[in-house]
Length: 302
Image (cartoon, rainbow, N blue to C red; front, top):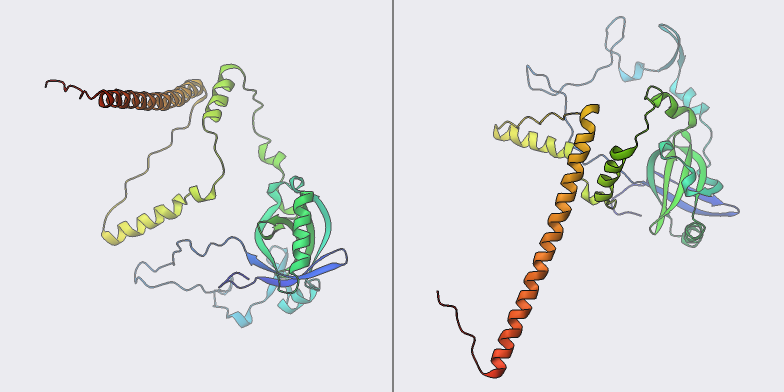
């Protein structure tokens, strides 16, 4: 169990006739983000949230609040929270694996939230057997259970010494990509423009390293708070100029030229360094020969 971290869910992981006790821990957290409170400008005091009746505008205390489903404009079916709890499927606290699938079968758009899945002390062998078998078979597992008062589908994958379980969005929750892109014009880029774009990509290839990505928004907020404390003002950011179709080819040429120039500079620097090293070796060789012959090298008159 991770030190100082409370499990979000505890239950059993079952595959075939094998089961082991497991726990889910939050893999991603927003607790370190900078947060703001809502303040009354006139008094400088924090503002509290109060629920009010939309018609009478009277405050409604928590014990007087309930749930409702709107059937018409302003008409609701009243549903008590206890009725909601009774309608939720009974949880047997078991993540039962329904199928093993290739890891690439699930589109990233269905991913919701990741959780670390760890074994309890008594189920370590079964857990490790499943983890290692999934690694060798290069598969992920689809499982279902009730999590946080909802029936959830979970994708389980090997991750380091343990497993990572990602809750998945339902199909009705994922919007159609066809609708998102339906207004995009049909363009086919060819010739020099395509080649220049490919050249820029080839010069900017790298590797994914999360540690190198800083949260610029959080850093900007921290700078803003610091500047406010010191009575300073921050410089206004420069506006981004969107490339126009007529200027796109020129912008690509300029970008490709800058990349080539930077690459050439790197090569020249390396070549100069190699030449310098060669001169140093040659000078060292001359000095060695002079020493062995007993003659001291002459100094140049200044």
